[in-house]
Amino acid sequence: MKTSLFKAQISLLPCAGADDCEIETISLGAALVSRKWRAKVEAVRAEADPAKRKALKDALPCITPGGTFSHVSRAGLIAASGFLCADIDYKPEKGINKALAGFDLKAEISRLPFVAYCGHSCSGAGYFLIIPIADPAKYKAYYRALAADFEKGGLTLDPVCSNIAFKRFVSWDADPYINTAARPYSYTLPEREHATRETLGRDLDAAETAAKVEAVISACELNAWDITETYGDWVRILAALAGTFGEAGRDYAHRISALYPGYSYEQTDAKYTSFLKDRGHLESPAQIGTFFYIARQEIGKHDFDNLEL
Image 1 (cartoon, rainbow, N blue to C red):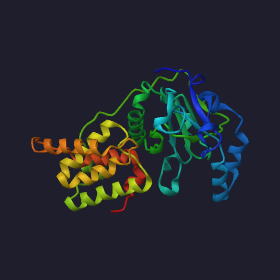
Image 2 (tube, one colour):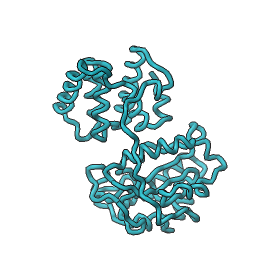
Image 3 (tube, rainbow, N blue to C red):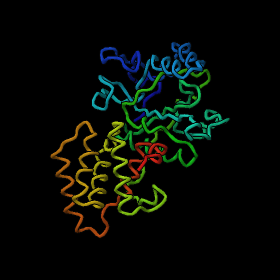
Image 4 (cartoon, rainbow, N blue to C red):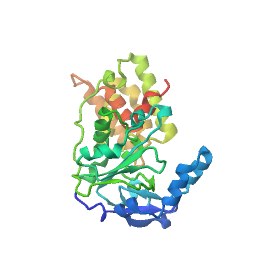
């Protein structure tokens, strides 16, 4: 899919909590370069008091770089913009992207032919990227591949942006990087089984495995994190739970599946039963490491690694 940055259409909301009737349509390019919100964004950056700063930020308009929406959710998507938005937050106090200290990302981003825009986020510390994509249906898969690429370079992408319905606060950058000839990103990670050691750095015994799975699912329930958004991930997660826990994993399967808006008890139960039947005929059942791998990609490295058992 190839769309001009300045012709792509997205939704604009007057604030994060705006009603559906307040949603407007705007050009993505226009939203990125408009001076309309400059004063408000600079006020956020100048405010030293955290509470006041947050209040100013929450009052900013929001855009949905992924497309136009009747309601800001995956189900409310009217038309995809053909672009993906990635946030690179700078939160050194939490150990997130400490590599950005003294580093000008905009000066280096031209090395990546698929980046159409790079500018400072409304906080002024981090950055956000706008990237054309080949197929909007693969938005999450592209984001996952991008996150893996940036992680190799020592930078972490905010996992929240992996949702095509992600809304971000407007920003202002006096000197953004813009490449209207950026090539669409089309790379996805190959689907394969992942060992626990690969994601966690070591193998776990049975009790540790159960405790880690419980910690992941409990965190997802607490924060309403849906790691089963794509059908492929959902299937791999259920297969991993069935291959590891057998019948004892059925409750896990329902709990994690129930976070998806289109959850069906009957469909989940039938799919899990099918994996249990396959389990006895497979030389190598699906590995729980795949569950941990998908969860880490969706939740984010920092939050996943800090889950308490």
